[in-house]
Amino acid sequence: MLKWRDYDPNVDKEIDSWILANFSKNAHLINKYAFFNEPASEQYRWYKEHPKEGSNIADFFKVVEINNEVIAFLILNYFRDDSERLVLGVNPIAVEPNQINKGNGTLVLTDLITNSDTIIGHKVDVFYAGIDEKNNISTKVFKNLGFKESGRSDDKEFVYYELKR
Image (cartoon, rainbow, N blue to C red; front, side, top):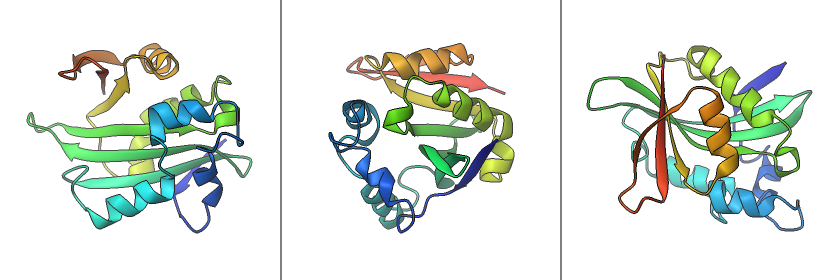
């Protein structure tokens, strides 16, 4: 049902438009919690120019489709933490703005948890996410899938969640 593929800034130009107010009434959510008013292609360019700065093993830019329609974009940071666990950080997961609150975030995240070894080609011990404390939609999705709070940023604006395999 879901098709995962690598993000291609030359093919996936529409994802850049997700931040535009005239794209969707939910564009403000994408800007506030996922892209911070920066197009996906710019984030991709930054990661390519700064390899290993986002993680110590690999970064993955993934697009998820249903019936050839893009429903989500994810940046995944794969790293080994101080406890030697192989961690897959979800940073961010952005659901196509017109598809928010339709269960697609849960669908995508569930599939990632179930099939991460295939999706990124590596073993995962722990899934990790830092979520803005005010992002009720993402917080609900992650908690419903079993993620547990593992800490907070010093300014208390971000809550960190983990799900161990």
